[in-house]
Length: 204
Image (tube, rainbow, N blue to C red; front, side, top):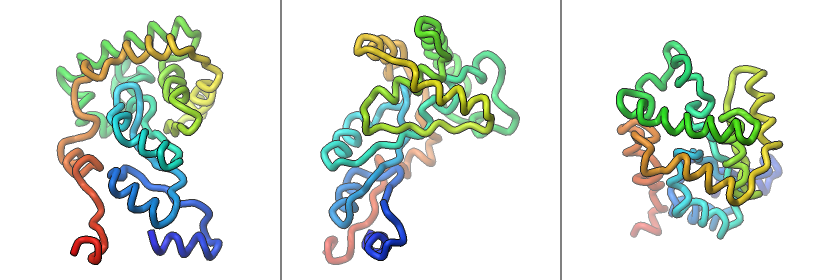
C-alpha cells in the first residue's frame, strides 16, 4: 500500500482498489491510503459480505464492486434449461454438481417466475437486485456475448420497491442455497480465513 500510495502521489495512478480482502486487511490498507473500491463476490445466493464487509465499506466510504452478480450464471438459466458449456469450471463447482445443483435449480425457477412479473429476464432481475443494494454498489456481470451485454445493461431499467426486494430475497433464502460459493481448497484460503501479514514492527 505504501508503494501504491507513492504511485498516486506521482500521478501514475488515480485510485487504489482491493479484491477479496479480509476486513482487517481493508482497515489497515485504508489507513495507509484511502481505498476507492473493493471487489467481492455478491449476488442473491452469495450474501456473506452483508454481515461485516458491506458495513465496513460504508463506514470507510469504500465503493463495492460485486462480481458474479448473476450467481456464476445460475440466474441466466442456461445451466438449468440446457446444460453447462463444455469444459466449464462450473462442472466441478460445489453449487452446480450433484444434489446441490438439483436443490439450487428451485431457486432459479422461483426467480424466473418473479422475472416474468417484472417483465425482465431472471439475469436482469438478479443484477437489478444487486444494483438496488445501494448507490455505492456497482456490479460487474461478465459475458462473452454482445447480446448478453445488452441484456445486462437492461437491468438498470428494472425498478424495484422495498417490497419487491424482500420478495426476491425471500425467493433465494441463503439457508436453502446448497454448496459453498467456491471449492473447498479456495474457500480455505479465502478472505474469511486469510489475512495479509502485518509489518514486522506491528507483529513484534
